[in-house]
Image 1 (tube, rainbow, N blue to C red):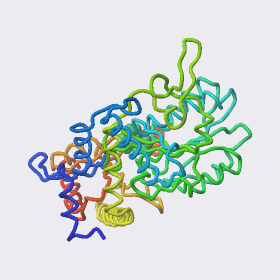
Image 2 (image 1 turned 90 degrees about the vertical axis):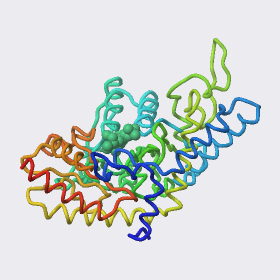
Image 3 (image 1 turned 180 degrees about the horizontal axis):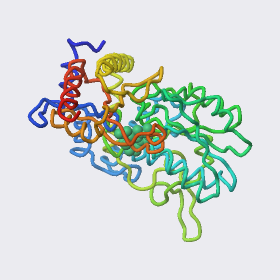
Image 4 (image 1 turned 60 degrees about the vertical axis):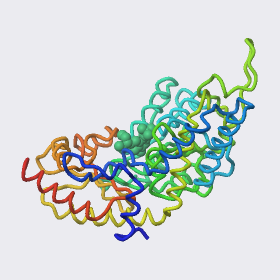
Length: 408
Ligand code: C6P
């Protein structure tokens, strides 16, 4: 269990926690934007660059073979982490945005035609709106949107009503980065499959708050960013069912992704290399592997339970503050609290909190359509990770009172 006794040991693994911001001990509550990294991650990356530092799949020399071994081992670790059936279903990407662009572009090119329909939801991050919107514009297709209740839950009856013979793909977020809502993705996938429609899940927030088993979920595509699960920035993963990945055309072309090139014709490499054009981020993949090992070693259930306790405690503490309204009160929520203070702009609140050493996110969180539907311009968002403590929530609650005192 993560307890008051062992949390200090966990915190020691994260050097960035040990610093002052504006002469106060840092309270880092911007984990939905990016989590801090344990030392083992930077050590793994440094280890790669200080010793192996070679390109993959190309050389016969010793270091190049070691690089290939390290990179492919990282792929196997990701496969195990999300329980994919085969390591060739794991494509390394730059992150979630890159992975969604890959699927939208590639799937759109082959399978979307004029008059077709794509289903997303009202709570999507721009990364899961704009690529699909672009495909729709290019192909003359239509975006259909699952609405959200006032509590921040998807209206599943309305979701089912959106399907027609023209529906080609569903792409929804696992967890809302604004509201914290954990969507019932298994049910969403089951419904789509009834209509023979594939489903892509944006797991940017999901990967770090739920145990992912892509075979059990039966999702067709699942993607996430390394930097939100204690791994390096610029790394990410697209999982795709082998059948689908075989059918999709390459997203980018060039070296690595080819089998044979003549000036007349090029044949493409097999999976997963078909989708990994150019020199990959080998050091990043090694760092991501170290992050996943760290998370597994700490214990996924331990982490989720700890974050749940922080969410409950934080919700209770913040609810006691007069004039504070929480956005997102779904029954099933991750460790995210979005809120506004009566009469106080979110940026002003965020600025004062920063002066008090507390890092939170303010603004529309790259989810403008959702924010607009809530009738607001943005929120202050606190999001918790495995190293946060209830004491930090106490400091946060006091700081919010200070904000009210100064600006209210
Ligand atoms: N959200 C936040 O909420 P990238 O930038 O590719 O690593 O992830 C994009 C992305 C996609 N989907 C969801 C649900 C997300 O939350 C995010 C990133 C960050 O603070 C940045 S806006």
